[in-house]
Length: 335
Image 1 (cartoon, rainbow, N blue to C red):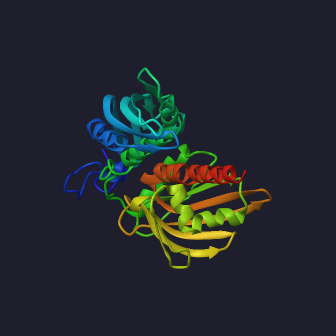
Image 2 (cartoon, rainbow, N blue to C red):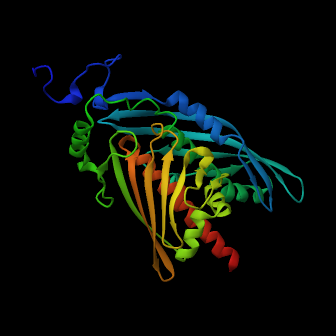
């Protein structure tokens, strides 16, 4: 047995009122099943889809079978979820005024598949009205996928509040522990540990994405309020000048512009709402012109270790994938 003051600090329980899981080293688990059922009902019911064919709206979430949980180990969050879902929909044909009903089935929403790869089946009761079924298969499916992303985002932010506890060990010991744990980091995304803002273990995320646009066009998407609102599908505050404010995704992301070089570089003071108070990352967006395309090089420095995966997913899903869709829509409209 190690003497007091010796040994690995991650295993020592001291000076904590709850005497629980110092430095978040031990395995803890929280059942998210009941919370998830309520959240899935919240995000999936009442989705409105309108088009030239008519108007549809999702109804009751009639079948919710499955489970979800979140575990914490070595300062990292691990998510498990598996759901079989079915909800109703109803709609009205624009020309005839006919009303029709159907259902939407999601047989396997799980962490094994991306939301975009998750199977979504739309059916309709017998009779005419296939134009509404087609509307639900296209626009309706997109709305359902957005709702599923909202559920997963909430699962990884709202539900996990408090799971990563304040640490006892000195910052230097925490960093050393995290360096020993960093062997499982994805090879194609180099990281380095750093301390920014409040003193918590952080990582640096590097990502690259190529867009079918000019550097000038892509730069405008990040600095023009109307375009930001288009790809984020939410109201936004965009003051694209040094010191100007930034707020997106209903306040889930906020910060300010620190540096702007048109068509070349944007530097942001950037944070997610569920991060420790007053803690910001520094995000640098560098635009590399590749003739008909632009490579966006992202460096996100100062991300809390426990939020590494959710931050990466935020940039991949909420920014990059939605910008690709916006660019494609813009291209289609000009052809």
